[in-house]
Figure 1 (cartoon, one colour):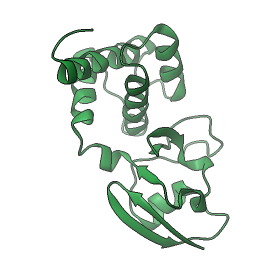
Figure 2: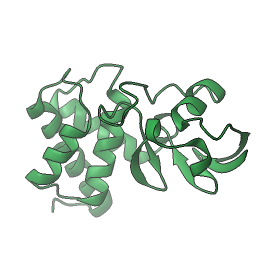
Figure 3: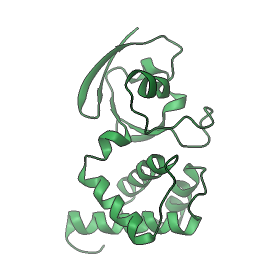
Length: 161
């Protein structure tokens, strides 16, 4: 089955089997290893990507589903100014995620602060619990999200909101 989509800003066309998961295509066919295969059941969050701007779990997406979509992996996201905001926020919070979950925590943070520029406790709770790695404490990850939101607001609006 032929699938065409925009991957990290580049048009990509592949032949995929109907039962192939997106995580497999990203890692094996495209050598994009930032999304990690954890549970492969959609609960751990390690395989997070952005699909048409929404946080999605690549282990749960059949590869054919991304036809005519926009897929952003951590490799592409790291090239954006939004990534720098999050990097600063994580540094300020003293939150250093392990290499296994870092990409998922960054993309989850991006989702949280894009959908809620001033994240409330419910948003923070959902974001922190979206990635099941506890290499950083709940409080540090929560603070990293909060600080990242503050950095982004300052960059976009020039003041605290």
